[in-house]
Image (cartoon, rainbow, N blue to C red):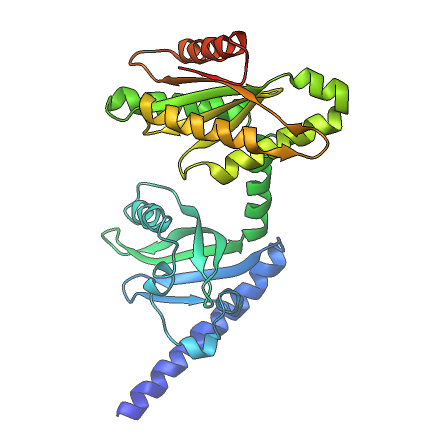
Amino acid sequence: MKVKKESNQEHVMDDLSDEMITDDNQFLIQFPWAGNLGQWKWYYKENRVIFNDRKAKQLGYEPKQIGPIGFEFFTSKLHPDDFNKVMNNMRNHLIGETNAYEVEYRIQHKDGHYIWYYDRGTVTKRDSVGKPLLIEGVVFDITESKVVEDRLRELSEKDALTNVYNRRVFYERMEKYMDMASSNPEDTFSLIMFDIDHFKKINDTYGHLAGDECLRQLSSLLVADKRLHDQIFRYGGEEFFLLLPHTNLSESILVAKRIHQLIYEMEIPKVGHITVSMGVVEYMANETLDQLITRVDDLMYDAKKAGRNTIKY
């Protein structure tokens, strides 16, 4: 009897596989989009998932070696940052709060790297009391489009010459940290503003290419030296901001002095040594962004008036 039961189960799975192959071939013809991995079906009560070979192979598995699987075969491979999003999305659809399960997530390949998927499904059959019996969906590999999306985001956020954050991102991050500091006054932050002394003279004497190289090398120095959470922005021309989260004024002054010295010691081909003038402030409660920027900007210009190559706080 045991042999007979296993034979029947294999026969059922073969029928289901044949069904999926037929449906999947039709689907791929109807929707020949890039990244199309085909269809999947989840028999909810039995917790049995069937899917086309392409999806399994794309994750590094041989379909015939996997055998019958449940929903957790895939959910166990979700990126930790995406797990709750996926589970909540599916849960909301199963109880009828949304018209479809639709989500983007990262799933782990057998060799350890992650692949981006776009997944969409709907409950196609419910029992007499409305509980789901069958969920059917489609899945696409969107890894390449995510790479392009990330690159476009980087281009929109980074300064093209120096590859540090641009002015737009500066304003966004400042609003974020000001909100955080307002919610928790103990979680303060500081801001350093500086620019290169006599930068116009560098451009006029050595040419704009040399001036560009000064900006690039200065930025590279800052990126290499900064602490993990510090953020660097090119505000415009030769002006830069350094945002120091979780840092009070006395701590930020030490950071400014270290950077000031490192910049002075750096030697740039053709130009030689450069100096910077700095202003340093700690965020004050209820201060607006304009007030904060004006305060640190005034200090930086005080440093210039004092002879440049100095720090004011």
